[in-house]
Length: 392
Image (cartoon, rainbow, N blue to C red; front, side, top):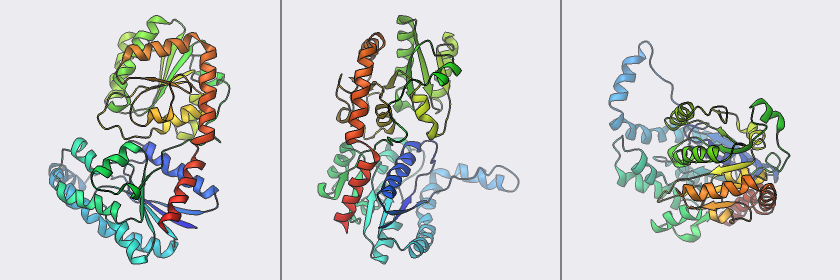
């Protein structure tokens, strides 16, 4: 089977890294099952127009951005239609899969023209995000609501990453049997149990410590404020504890760096800004305990790739009991769960893991076994192919 995939994510290796990795890994697994996949990243990052004759246009655009953004995004569909028509004509796929994005309406039109089965990937609630996180530009919400629903309802089938996200769309009128939940997963060929990475730990000067790790984009929703409280408490309580924090994301990253400097604990808090995804397994294997301390959010619709990768590496995870996470982790079986924002509960769980090497080993082994049995990208690819069969 030949599959063409359109993805409209903007900042592929920044804010959208998790979603980018998901698409790459999912379709790589589909390819390993004998199918041909053509991935097309449809949105390029804009160039900073700050030099020469372009500077005036840049300043004008910046001042009028609130009003120009919306029509500009809608008009981009003219380019999408022209370019994607050519792509589909050349690829001659058996099925089209397209990721939902605000303002986009080319895939349902083209799928109808080519009489192609069309699957919508619905991995973020775009109207919800615009209303809550993009209030800086004018947006006719009624129009965008209709475009969003048309993108989903005109698909043969649709899939999303969590039950929480599915429920959001069901409440907005999408039939329950139209939308299938296909969570994220882990690549067990790269993320798997291993011995500690002593070379990495020696290079980072943390080899003599029990290393508590965190990987994320240092955004507000990743629990950076909770990290500060945990660092403060655990370094005071445990002389042999250290932290390894991997990721970037301003302004929270700057706030965390300033905190570490002001407390004079840089020798026990190692911060690494950005590493390519293929280097992440080595960093996870330099950790003894891993964290996902998400704060309370009223709508936690995510399927955190990093949690699947933590578990696949056989690391004991201490995570917030929120959204999809309790569906993946069973407390004290293959991880530890705490109420979001309950710092004392997180401290108690981490204390137990620091003090009990056997508990760390047992929980980590159970975590890796569970991923192997239920949560690999192979499992997710099989689910997607089953959905495609139903759509055909």
